[in-house]
Length: 349
Image 1 (cartoon, one colour):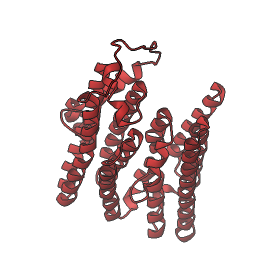
Image 2: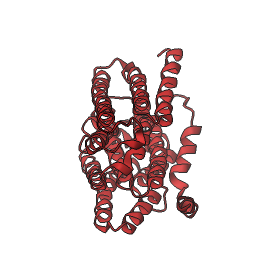
Image 3: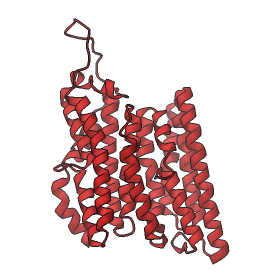
Image 4: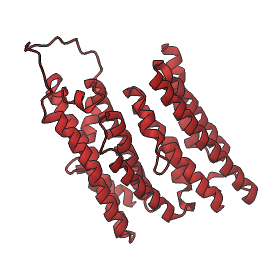
């Protein structure tokens, strides 16, 4: 793609998200979401491959549906209650419709079916943008409308997403689909705690973006798209393979890695709010996710790819990728747990 065109598209992508962040009026927020969607579509379709075109079409249709639902809900609220402000969303029909529309935008269960299919058709860099940056604008709106939404609906969507995210990833061999189900599960954890502690949702979202970015960049560095190709990674870069395994365990939420912090704090908060059953179910669904992360770790570090070559030194091209972002973000994905006391003190203020 032409660098000038790419610069314009990425700038529009940032503009759409910032516009949604800054808006207090539903029409301005909707406009930001539309700019965001229209900016990423050419980036998704740049491969000119049938699979990429199919993924782009599916993404456009789901995002357009969600945007139309948001417009319908905000218009309904303005008609019935006389308010266009995001914070003044008060009619039950409008709040429920907006919640379902934002769930569709994010890929939360039960409207998650598009996300694994779309992510599977994209290259890893575009998939990274879709899994991280594209979640910010809908989450900003969801945090603003959360106080007016029925808490039972939020908890139900959160638990269902963690269950679907864990269950759906068990039978996959494609790494992009596995990361899509991982995304659904993590978003479920964030929605689960959204109404009780929005600051914890932001913490979880920040760590999710860090860990997912590290996972995607690692796969891009190793040029791995399936579990079988992942098994060849340790011969290319043993250090990166070991760190990638730790990043996957961090995504699973194992101590003493960064991913343990949000899960620990969320379970603690749910127990404080008198929801021990929800906390127990969430912790059990995390075990499902942990299973497929462990499966990836096993393929990455403990298996030898069947190799019929007799040569001991295969040809290797010079490595040209910039590794500073990957190294920085991997350190953050692995080593932030000791900051938990400082984080809890900041959240308590």
